Amino acid sequence: MANVEHNSDAGIILDRRQIILGASAVGLASTLGVSPAMAQSAPKKGGTLRMGMEGGSPSDSLDPLTYADSIPINMSLMLWNNLVEVGDNGDATGELFESWEVKPGAADWVFNVRKGITFTSGKTLDADDVIYSINMHRGETKSPAKALLADIKDVKKLSATQVQITMNKGNVDLPFNLSDYHIIVVPNGFKDFSKPDGTGAFTLEEFQPGVRAVFKRKSGNYWKPNRGNFDRVELIYIGDANQRTTALQTGTVDIINRVNPKTAALLAKNAALKVSRTPGMGNRFCFVAHTDKDPFTNRDVMMALKYGIDRQKIVDNVYSGFASIGNDNCVGPKMKFYNPNQPMNRFDLDKAKFHYKKSGHSGAIELQVSEGAFSGATDAGQIFQESLSKAGINMDLKRVSGDGYWDNVWLKQPFCAVYWGNRPTIDNQFTSTFYGGKSNPWNDSHFENAEFSKALEAARVEIDAKKRQDLYSRCQELVSQNAGMVNYAVQDYLDAHTTKLQGLVPSGRYDFGDARIAEKGWFA
Image (tube, rainbow, N blue to C red):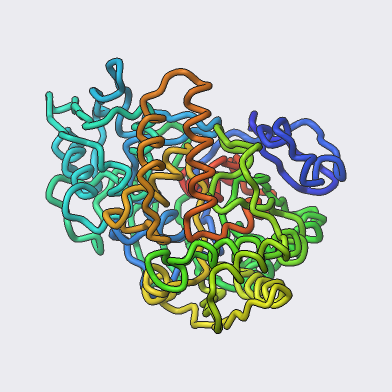
């Protein structure tokens, strides 16, 4: 567990990268101290991993075009593999693409398909499967990964084990884009996702959306050494944070995600449990408005909202300090090319009053929130409402059902609670969230800015680090000052598990070890 620091007294595991980059800034390292990493036992087979998770709904599906939260992602990576994996060190490493080569300009790529891999059905993986899987997210598709692959001009088979990808515009981060969790590899022509046929370590035994899912390890040796160790995996939907904590404490489950920040320190004192924390790399919690719908077409209304939210109060009271303040562009302070000198949108009643008066708007502004969006959305909305009232801005806080929230509210209602997961690169973060205008189905603020698009495209092929930093810095400023996003906090990832569970390395991308604990873990 070379990338992890552990404090035996507190029971909290930290990502070493975040300690080096400044975990003390959020108070943890200075409070608890840092000691050498815990030794891990050698991986071994056997046992049933029981996962208690938030991040799903009764409408969940195994169709990758629908993945929008943690539970479908974790299920998918038990059954299928991606083309590229993001390693614990943050680098793009080969998965079903074993290796690749790129020509200068980053527009012409050749990828080598891993040999000797079979699907559950017995079919051998080949280039046709890869091409079909990539093309599911290109052209006329509702795939959230469409924007990430929009600059691909052609995907061509060179041989049964080699694929050429040609870009309209170069992108040095293409392998990271191909690591997106929607881009799983399925057999050529595959369509029935209720009957998974994958190259992952497990097969599906049972799936009750919103309730539970059960997986069984495939016979024989998994193609990844020391992975796919559990005989069975049971994933249980537990939306309430307190109920998840109780399930872990009573031994009903072995691991939980999204630990309640208010009880994390207390939970870590339990000698039988460990809390895994990755500071500043977690979910980006937001209130997002459609800037092509009134009153959010008025930039002064948006700036009044950005200056009128007491971000620090939310971080302190809702997340108990296990978060950092966001700046309305989803770029966290630990991300490469983050610009610490960008204009910061911070709580300022005078500026909020100024912009609101200038906007000429009157009447209530409706914000829809739900714990079905994320834990703490309602409490954060109440603080937002209270702080806006001090600036003379009337917010109508509407609490809506969590059932079907991502189908019925997000992308449909003009102002609502949203969270965005961390992405492996700043280009991936911007492309997923803000690039492509209306052609990007997940551009939830309907942001469109020609200068932003030009700068982002230039940064993708820029080799000079300083010039690339300047371009990404400009992108951050343009988004934070013009998009309809109020990204008020970047949460720390907080997972908790029993001490018998081994193999969890905090990831710089997603919780549960980049959503792969079922594949990577084992019992001591």
